[in-house]
Length: 466
Image 1 (cartoon, helix red, strand yellow):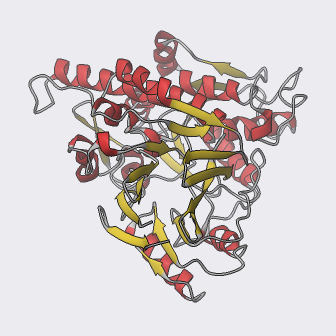
Image 2: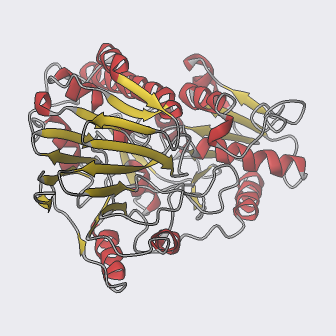
Image 3: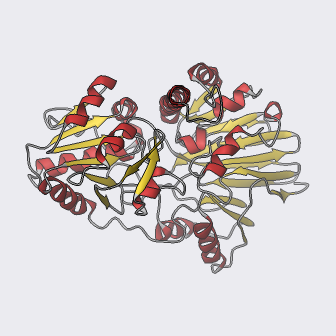
């Protein structure tokens, strides 16, 4: 049995995760992400898939984020018809995220056509909602620690990765004629001291390790985020303006609500502040936390009753687009949480359009902003950002809270590696910007491990004749 790995995304970049494992003639894709951020990366979504989609026999999904799942409707349209394996919580979140992704693309294509700022006469979305519905029947769900027989020679086990609801480390066991080998995909690893999610499962051995590197070059300690959050809220309210928080609908939004709930209960912020969660998908994702108690630390008591974390009386959930637009008339004493987290689309766009120019308003970033995204440009201090065909001046206050990221930082990544009782035959650092990938790889080499930083579409022979 010969085994090869081909890196079709998440290589040299923090987005578009797609790792192809070929076991003789059986092809298994681990994650099927969409490229985001820089235009040169986004254009890859429109290119023909690097291998024939019909030749792929199965797909394994580590978690629901679009940079790990967002290409699924496209690859199904191109001929993939095999099973898609993931945890049950990931399946529910994936449906929400993919439907939202399709809706955003449809709206952006229609808006570009209406305003005439696309170079295409009739701009089209990468996929639409009907394409997403073709993916759903292919999904096969499992629980953590349940062994899945993907093919007679291939078993997979999903372990808790933290990060977001249902996120997984995938442990893949290959049985050859003479011996067994193990490939471990870390997926996106979560924090070790998250107030809502468990720390990533400890893995003790692997022959091949594929590990994420988002914060491979730096620490991002959770130094009392509640106190930092309190200070930003107070500064924003003292300016007599509103606080706008772009946040990922899954994970980050729920963590923000958790901390705001604490600040209100402890009477550390003004009780008259209004909090608006303006994202239907985030509302749906929040409700899923009440369905999947086995996937987080919060118990039924914490999620129900008078002081329930997500149903607290100060929180107003905004479903209708018309109600979302009405928030533009809020002048002060309000916190608006909206998606997308990197300001690349969704309802956050009209909030930015209306608030970036207001000197009394504040925008607060609470998560990683990838290169090329609108969020990264605002955070980097650009005086104007492009949106809806216009250059919008950035006059509002820009704040950032470190430590709220759902990704393990450099120290936590190495703590996770320290659980291995022996070094893998080969370790691949993926899912990071170039500096993070290289610095993390160099640090792992100092442990005496064999490490590679794969390039886009690079192929490695990892086992021969096993």
